[in-house]
Length: 466
Image 1 (cartoon, helix red, strand yellow):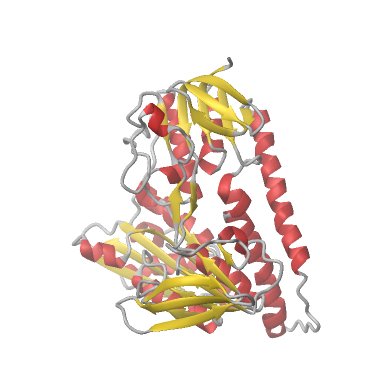
Image 2 (cartoon, rainbow, N blue to C red):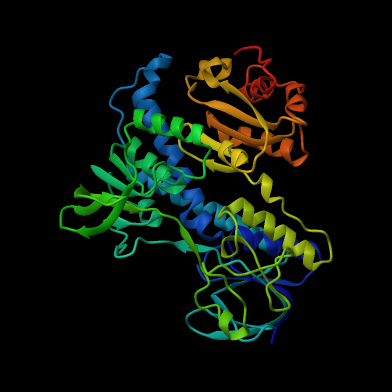
């Protein structure tokens, strides 16, 4: 029986990063992944393929509809969907192979198969043909999450699809209904809207992306409506059935009332994700889960069973790849006796539509609910020279800072390259910068990042270009 210092179950962003960092720290490490390729949901059927299609569809829409504004006349622009999908698949393949290369470089042993507990120190690996058992001093559970479905609706990945099915459609649907107004639904809706589909978003709550800053969320919805999205908010989905040539969706007002039938070629179910712990044998070793099926851990990522840790989507917190990566590094360092730590107040979130929406820290609604006395600085991209020159001037930067000491507590951006700009805000907040600190940092001109500086200056009402 082969022995390891650390075994990681799950080769997604949290798991493979934990394995590599643990190996760097001198441990003998193994990583078990049943998918057959590393990278988890994020790389295989999530973040990366969706961003590849977002990029490709954005180029298609820009060339077809916007190029003429730049003096570039294009005619006869056609969509080659198979080529677009092939490019997406190639991106995935290259990155998956890249992680395998990193495992070899860092001497991480890679097992293909499903991992489960025989005991707290013995792990069974089942590759579908044979089983083997390995022994470990420490185990890190990093099995991620799975699609959450609407009760009574069967996802067939053909007409009623999850995000996985939406990434591999064979043709552009004439009509698509997205159930759920969150990050994933809006991103996938954007892909198919740009390629020609009529997209309707059905959301149970009265706003899209409910956790988003309210002002930014309203502006986001208006921009998407201008792009052709239709929204049915405060609407409950009762059922979705394949009626042959179309899917029939029965809905009603969230507060109750008359029912309505919506029809579409494709229905995308995108209401969230749930922790994936199926088949791990947690009950056998006594690992505790909470009422939502998440593995319970302490501040050091340790479960109630000595030597067993958990990170990423299977524990509490935002289900984000970069959150899992940070936890992967932290748990490896903690096992090594170092001070691994994750600051959950500075984990950014990004919606990769166009324009992008990014945020970190508190929303204005949260600041009010917590009784924080704060100031707000804003700057519109329409007043930013680089955004205007590029023809992408929708949106704004919004900064919240404490009134007493000017510490920045929240940043919310909707506009060009928001997902890149937000990194500057994360660095500022990690080191507890004030709006004054940001305002006094020289930003290159002309860049979209200047809007971030101007918003910081606006906190104390001294923006130059507003």
